[in-house]
Length: 158
Image (cartoon, rainbow, N blue to C red):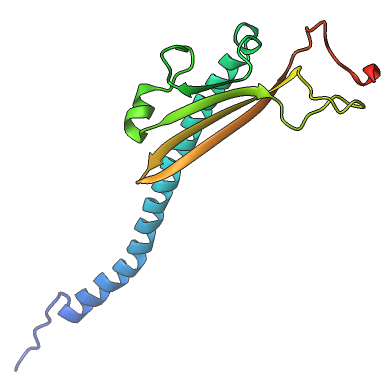
């Protein structure tokens, strides 16, 4: 009497089919991880740029600097203004540069007179860097009013 020998194992077709099914499921998951990693990295760069721009803006708002230098445009970093700087790692990694512009707020006039408002300044910080060979820019704009002026103009002056 012949006995049938049972072999355990997988055939080549079964192995190829299982590899295909796993590949179809794993590849999209890996792509999501890669996409998420790139998004996090871009967000980190933007966060770093916003912190740097905010630090420059905070230093520029000081009374000792701002009212003595209107109008002015400073390239950051600048040896004449060492308080305004970019982190060395940010400059090196992304070839970053920046500028700070302090000017009378354009388009703002004294209510009722139409005269240009000289007690309101516009501060603009612009950071530029290269990300994967593409130039990126971050712009931060703020205003500063001189409320300590004896020459403060209001709508009652018209």
